Length: 74
Image (cartoon, rainbow, N blue to C red):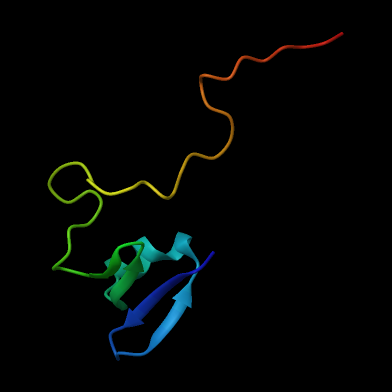
């Protein structure tokens, strides 16, 4: 599912979530939509900024975790 963003020229568009960090670092995105509303770059708290992120982790983990017990049936 794509993330809604506002570019530096105030045009709103959608991008693949994988591109968000790179677009923030290169200064191409002014704001992006979170589940609780618009997050403004440089104003809103971001993941990795001075301490743990307090919001909901929506990225999730991909693939099986360590807690999975595999049973092989022969």
